[in-house]
Length: 400
Image (cartoon, rainbow, N blue to C red; front, side, top):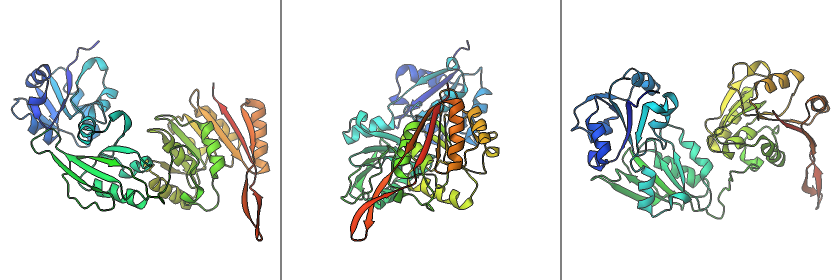
């Protein structure tokens, strides 16, 4: 087992004075200190070799491993393991090589400033990530604490809120918390006009207007929320499909024949950090899927041109697979072979030809086979009657 040589230290706006004595001693004894300009400024009294974050940032691990054997400190803001650099380093180096020294996080400080219970809020980061991903968390009475990307981020989020009927939501930007330059800016989403420091934390208390868009995290969003050309997995069938796919934290979905992306988008909304690769040969449908992902808070939907099974080669093994159409023996064989143990596969069919393939595969592999029939109320002259949709044959199974 390698002895610890790397210390990852959380530091706040109060600098060295805010560190525990043992942690302060670690920083003062360092031979090399790695961090951003802010971190170096907060510890400028310490004599050590100084290194800034490398460019590209992914080169950080190579930089650190090249320092193995020296006394190295990485300075991070607040808690290094909460949306911070410590988690990335911890995935790359053995845990026995690292000692973490957490400080109060921006979330803890912001919750204290707002008087909010941290257990009752959503903690998010859009720092260095697409701002649109916070859209999935805009819901009535939700309280959000968000690590932002820069000075422009609060105004972007204010527009997202206003466009969705949450314009009356109070917003507070908190900057330099715990330091002599701490500042606070209050307003509402619809009236937001503050110029704020680049490094800030945003608190949002979501207040819905009577006509606000309701976008729950559970599957079954209104079809009208998606751009589509008529060919899509409809709302009720989509909800049943997602129930069988079982979105889980960090899990990866292959959406084969993604179309407008409705299943992939709802998969990603359904669990924190869920990921999806949408495979679609038509450029117009990939464009619709990209627009839907952006509008509904899943901007990281990974869209690939191509058709299965050829397009599956080289992809990261998935935790779940959805085949919305054009299932064949070849597509199933390639998908099933790539699926992880305990992975879920769901295939839907509306044509007799696709249904025949499903029946044959079910006979050999087992699983659950159901037929979903749906009727919607629609005008019949001056009256109302039931108008049936095409029935959907759904086959689902878990890889054991």
